[in-house]
Length: 71
Image (cartoon, rainbow, N blue to C red; front, side, top):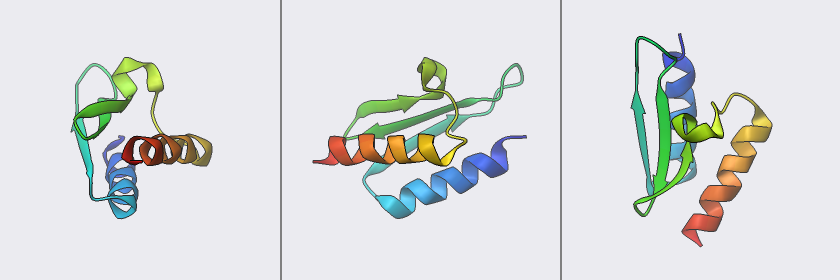
């Protein structure tokens, strides 16, 4: 399943910034939902079409989006 990958990604993001709100929900039909909020604003949503952060390129793109939202 995706839970170990989710936990690893969550830790990497939390290590990057403690100002994030990371939400997830496991679902029986699909691989679950994963959303990242900065200051109450949704900046990344697997359910919303951003897909799962499963490559270094996607992770770096998410980090860049977080940096911009924190600026």
